Length: 161
Image 1 (tube, rainbow, N blue to C red):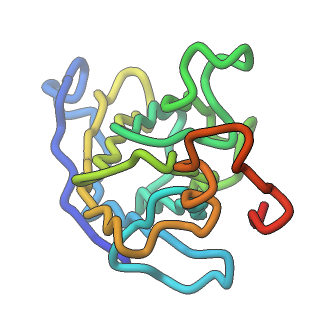
Image 2: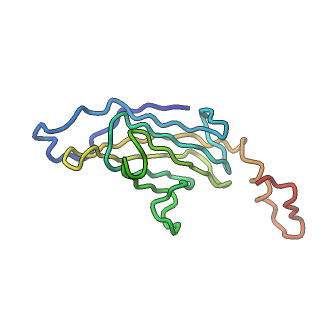
């Protein structure tokens, strides 16, 4: 699934004086499975590649997810596994940010991914978000192993990793 959303300008500074660049037309969020195929829903216990195309050059971005863990979290010590702060040219090239997003076996409902970014600190910041449904029926096979309750009956030889 690829979703394009028109971003909102959420904070303006010198942009009010007419110094802003062209307003980005859309932000594209793509969730890709391990075969790099676009998906329309997410499965508990599975990992995805998240691509966010901002449609314009950016300087800084802040990405959050309501569920799951990013591959490049904000805090390397794990305090913020669902948040990413990145700088174009330093953490990634151009206008497309890519990271992994792994859902826990307990994921349910929907996952909201939100991004705030700015092209230049003097031009304000933009914000976009997308919500994707979680389908418990397609849970990763490893989630079944996680449901076993007694250590005596757990046989991890059959549990895929």
